[in-house]
Image (cartoon, rainbow, N blue to C red; front, side, top):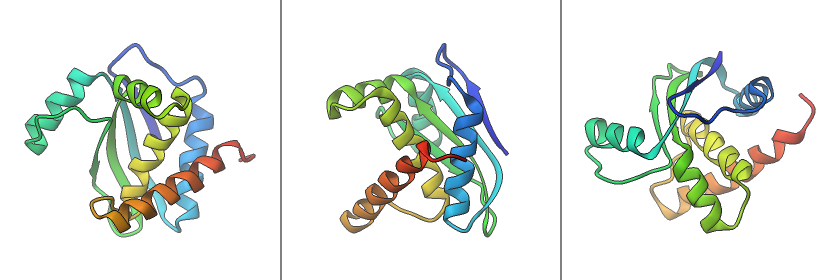
Length: 139
């Protein structure tokens, strides 16, 4: 089950559309959907988590905590909508496109994709693009 939680004024327009899309991403990777929580927050909220749990004193757009068991994906994905907005401006893309990229990125980590090496990052970007294109497909 995909759920959306808000620690900021931001809200997704059509949660069912996003939920169906995330479910389709999971299925397309031959994984099973467990409990996945998206938590939308601001920079301050995510920075506190980054410092407290990861010892990183930096701003970031996403932090995911993976509780998956085998093929069953479970976890909490925290997204700073402030950072997403900044990145959208920097990369000259729409807020919605950048948000979809970050949302896909989180669940792709649960599917086993990494982004620490150059090779892994290239594959992650390809997968993000592939999954973003699924957003407009009839579910």
